[in-house]
Image (tube, rainbow, N blue to C red):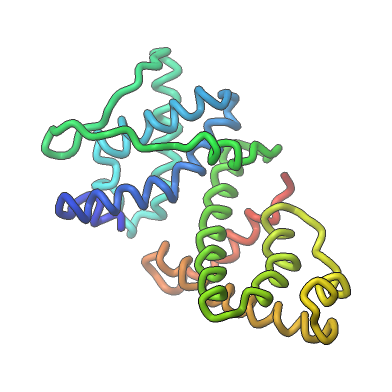
Length: 237
């Protein structure tokens, strides 16, 4: 996706850019907010970084998987950008240009999404960046698994998994007790509810592993990446 955005044809490259921005702006925004910016300033700085650094300075063209993770490069570039903005005290909003010098457009950052990007008390802006990236990846996987369950007539299975695993993991909610789920979905007993949960949990684990494999160049790094992802989600907020 990164290569396509940086070097692809106009149409596919545009699609790849949109996908990358959707994947990474919550982490960028979370980092900026935890540096002390208010909602509107953080949104403006996030937009500016995407336009001025990722696009105008061709950041993706410098990405090299042999030199480390893309998000490590992204975070280092973001820190430099914020330091530069702080020195110059410039808040001018710019529109991006593509490689041919043609006027681009400002990527949309929905205000509702800003409210959903929680400003929790992470230990540092770096921790907020990593945790938000992990949360965004997990949510994409959950959306895919939910859609598959609905297509296959497993809505109750998904609902049990969501109540026991997904919402406690992402929102810190207490898992709904099995007896309540048995009554809610008119199940036979707690064992049936547990089996339904396990069915979706296995699908989620498989889908998460696949999603993580797409973020690393070496298959041997998948286990480490999964471990870091889980730790970032479990980190005290």
